[in-house]
Structure formats: structure tokens, C-alpha cells
Length: 443
Image (cartoon, one colour):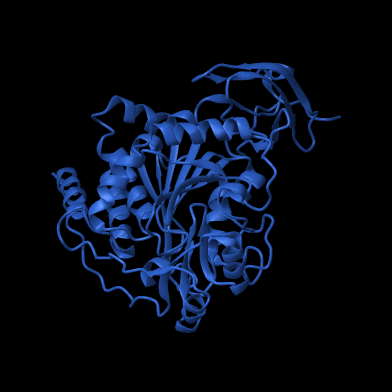
């Protein structure tokens, strides 16, 4: 009877949001500024405005009345944004859940499905709010030899649709686990992390920035450049960084809003990333399996605009993950009635990413004498390295089909060279290491 009541609570809460008081909207005016030529783009850049410029000829900015006057005097076309925000009090899915409601949903899922869903508190925001994440997997409370994948959202607190997409994915996986064989297979063989609110303060205030007034997606210490108070300066950045460092995510999707685009590394420079073939393959897969008529994808630097200190550059450059920002809607806060549409657009792609995280190469790195797991760096050709898990010793990397040479490096061990590893489409290959598939200690 207890389980039935819990399941009922999960379903009813999702359709009947608990009303919570939101902070008043930010004092700045949200403005869409149209950009017709490079001269206008340069003018806006030199104003050092809060916001972002998108590749299809406009930018979203948070402007003071004085800054808006500068835009008017420059003769730029603009529209003052009338947001469509409404709290989820209508008893339907066609409204945004606020920060507190999303926490309640996460609690209810972890309570109703304890065997496959575990809640973790990743940290505390600058404003003192809990940063919470879910891990969904069979045996969710232990680390296993399984590919890991993460979906985060809300790094900019006023970009709301991604938060809805992630919490709905968590509910979808949990509620269908026992009835859908495909979902059960994914959950049983993957470790899926759902991180709906990277920046709780921004979500509560409906603001891009955290309570310190910092852009959390300019604070990452990989190729950081003077856009926040210091590299890794914000608690929200440190919380997500620790989750990233404690796990070896094959694919990391960070949801944003303001345009429709899948933006992968690099964002800090125009050079192509070494893993371009595999990254581009997965980006195309996300795009073509989605419900969008056209979801463009490409490098952030050339396809959108140059930035430093972005999460996608750090997660790829430091951990070797296939990682990107997925811009899911042309408005940051689109009409609430469109939430189910964007959810349905992205669900097939999310499931494909979970599936494909298990294809490519995988294995475990262990000590040849004791069998204990070894923390090692795995180099695949000229690609960026990935790392084995120090608890289990497992590693996983998506690769397009082909033949690869591997190099495995660990402190205190002989470097292992594994040539000619064949990877087939939609399969996983376990490379055969020398020394009985384990690393030999250096003498």
C-alpha cells in the first residue's frame, strides 16, 4: 500500500504544482536586439552588455534604462521581451515548475523508486540554496562498471525550458522502468545523472546570474579569461565540477534557451577539437532524431560566438567527455503551452544519447598482481584522453566505427600500447591489454 501511495504522489504532484512565492523579476529590461551587420555587432560588443549574441542575427540582453537609450540612439532595431512566465498552479503540465517544486519532484522520485533513483546534494549556491542531482540506474547507490551520462540545465537561471526537459526525463525513466523493455535496458546498463538546477539563485530570481551577480557559464577554469571574479570562483561551478571529476561522463548535455542550436567545443578558439568525428556524429544523431525541423549544430566559436570559461570546453578539455550546450528554444521563457512540445522534441535524442554512451570502447584498468582498480589515462589516437574510474577501474568512450591505437598511462605502471582496436557501429569493443589484461607495476 505504501508504494502505491508514493506512486500516486509522484503522478499527482507532477500535474499539480505546489505554489511557491518567487522573487520579483529582475530590474533590468530583457531586450532582443537585431544585428544586421558586423558594425552593429562590434558596437554591442564594446558596450559589454549582460547577455549573449546568437548566430541568426540577434542577441538577448538584460539592459538598464540607460543602456536601452544607447541602443535607441544607435538606431538598432529591438524588441522589449514580454515574458510568459507562470508558476505551475494550473494542474497541468503546461506551466513552469519553480525551483522548490523541482526539488519536491526529485524527492518524490527518489522516494518512490529507491532501487533505481538516488538523490544527491551536490553543494550549496551563493544564495544558500541546495544544488541537487539525481542518479538513475539499477543499483543506483553504488558505483558499477557502466557508462555514465549527464543532463544538466539552468546554468543561466532565466533559461527555463531545459529544467523542464531534465526533470521530465527523470520521471519518464523512473515511471517506465518496469513496463518498457528499452527503458529498462538503458537504466540497467547506464548511470544517468539528471541535474536540473545548476544555478538555483538565478532560477528563483528569474535571472541569468547567481546571487553573486556572476555568470556561472563563464566561471569554468579551463581557458578562463577575466569574465568572473576568478577561475572556479563560484560555488555552483565547484559543485558541478566535483560531480564531473567524480564520474567519467561519456556524454554531457547542458540545456540552454534563447535560440535553437547544438554548440560543441571549442568555444574559446576556432580550432577544431581532436575528437571532431565522434562529436560531430553524435551531434548529428541528436539533431536528426529530435523533433525539430532543423536543429543546427557545430562549434561554439564559429557557429555562435567566442566565450571563455564555458562548461563544455572544460568538460571536454579536462575529462574528454563529448559535451555541448543544447539551445532548445528561441525564447528563454517561451509560452508555457509549448513546454510539452519542446519536451517531445528532445526526448528521442536524450534516449539516443543514453544508448550511444555505451558504444565505442570500454574496459577496466586493474593491477596485474592484485586485481585492484587503477586510475589511468586512456589515449585513443590523437584524441583527448579519458580516465578510468578509481573505484571500479572502468572506462568508456564513444567512437565512430574504425581502427584505433590506444595508449594507457598510469603513475607507477608500465605504459600499455594496444594497437589495431577495431570498433564497429552500435557496438562496444573491449581492448585486450598486455600482462593478462591488466597493468604491470613498474620495477
